[in-house]
Image (tube, rainbow, N blue to C red; front, side, top):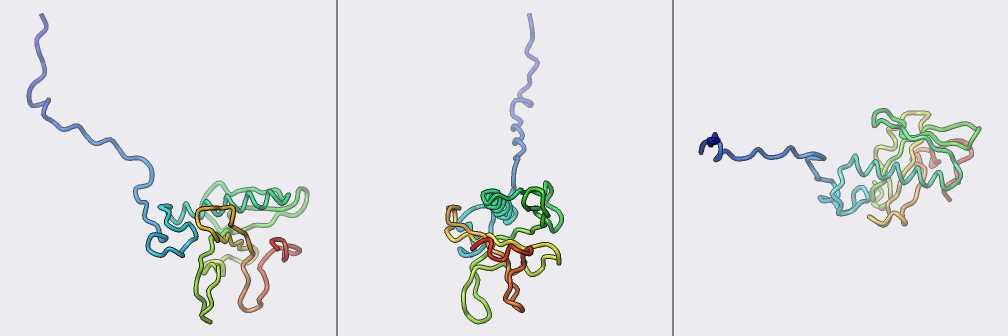
Length: 161
């Protein structure tokens, strides 16, 4: 006959909580400011919002007949390379635009970080006009205030018009 080897002491111990996987925080700037970063009311982190912008830019560039190479890592100033097959490829840093009030008091879609993109890399703004519905999003080149000209590869000035 087998005897009972369990004791009341081991039976009363609480089970450990399972390890939680995935992001630990769902705070986003859009919860504090509904006009920030485009994806209004979402629980996405700023990094996830940036990822969404990059994937939208890739799809839009490919839809216009360009070849696109996405940076597999999140480090460095280049998010993707694009160009026509067999021609020169251009490095791009994708920025998710925000609806902001400028010094003149006018509101516009812009990115304060676009002017920090290093020379030779082209800042591409994703403008999320309609929040969650990406069918209303658009792309545009960053325009320098000093020159009022888009920062883009040669020949691509009117590419998004």
